[in-house]
Length: 298
Image 1 (cartoon, rainbow, N blue to C red):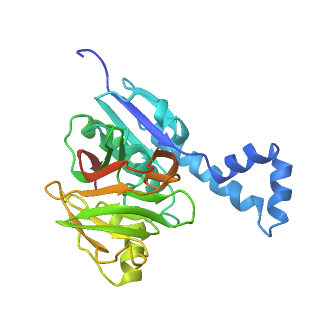
Image 2 (cartoon, helix red, strand yellow):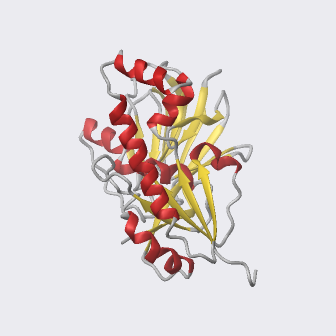
Image 3 (cartoon, rainbow, N blue to C red):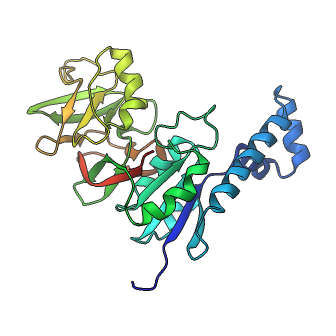
């Protein structure tokens, strides 16, 4: 709307000290808890103080005529993003993945508060770049990387979005049983579950799977395609192992039919609490999402 100034929305998660304090109630109890485990409270406090100093710095870079909001990661599902927001995620790479599914085209500035601890794949920006990039991002006068996202849709219309990957399997350590269809092949399987990953996710969980099976799949972050991996498929008289991994796109999405009486789940980006039930007969289709992450890059 005319006359409405842009809004900078800062996303952060609790520090380790804040989480410990919420659990143990007082600083002295936190200190005692850490001491019994051979850890030093002073180290945790220094990291806490450094993070909040960075957060103050980047929040101070907001132009005076702008609006501003600070949202905790745990409150993302209750926050209403506006189309003209500029989102600033301050923290580790996973924070951007947690945020991406709530966005619809807004530019995201990923700020790395501790390059010595975080890889910075999704938080590539130094804090001192925020003052320069906020106005430019509001006018879309910045370099943006359009990263592919994953969409899983159940046969009843329920959906999950992910930036990294979707997991389909059993909620416990027991085997998942299902029928999988991919690239024109179909098979009943028993396994530790199926991972369907974007190019972004190919640097995380999917990467460890590729290394363990020595079968790399090349996938760019902005490529409109996904990679799928069956974890530890078990051969038996009724289950096969011929479908183990591959590449898919929206012409050939991965389709899975549950053969689990209970405990079947689908979750995204490692957030098990936010899952879809996937019990007997349910059908899930995993494909490239229409939405993309608009990540501002240096």
